[in-house]
Figure 1: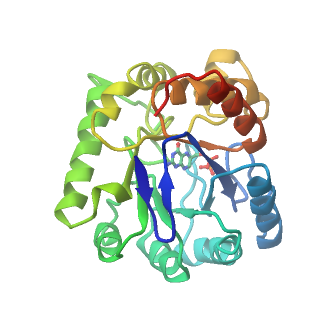
Figure 2 (figure 1 turned 135 degrees about the horizontal axis):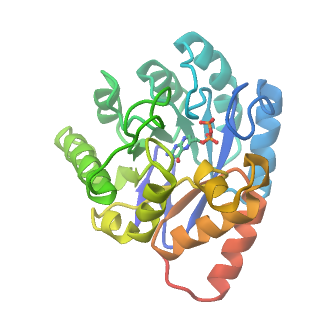
Length: 277
Ligand code: HH2
């Protein structure tokens, strides 16, 4: 399978690593570390040299309870970083739910729109559909970041996530978006308990049946803390294990903070000849 993006048609025959760059003061595990453009860009360069296949740059934390950021402020945070990252020779994704930020990022030439809101904000879907070939990641979320963890509830989490993603794909396809541009994400930690997140991992093949590559973001997430009793800064081993388990169950792209360690782990996984995406 391939992921068609603005400048690159990404071959997903082997699992790919998406490096996270949070240009925020308040992200749950690295808030404030790459908060100015220079530090964020240096981090981009470091992730690429560590083996990241693509970069995901975001200017608004979506951690549970996070306060929304205004459009102007989000643009101020991400645009200079996107501009620099676009010169690094790898696909660049913008992590945003705001159509105005998407529009500005696409005007710069960004490759992928990664939207935790699955292009449901007014105007977002049309904007992406009008673009000839940017890639898009559609993620499932129940509720909104401010309140999503207060009482997540499902009859069958995997079936409901699958139905939601299928409906979002159908809407984009009706708008004329080519299937190869669309990647899906179950949205680990977005309105889900730890056991619901692990059920999504156990039954990941049901989401693969939707016929699109899967991107998953387990890196440092609180479900790993629930399982291991470890704080966000101490979840590297658990994050690697989750990434490998997700790849083993067919995920094509893992969204991670710790690129070098994940790349090493995937090298071993590949050398073992295990089946993947
Ligand atoms: N998780 C986060 C943010 N964006 N996008 C996708 N597609 N999938 C995810 O699982 C996902 C995402 C949250 O992680 P992080 O960016 O590290 O934290 P914060 O939102 O606090 O900046």
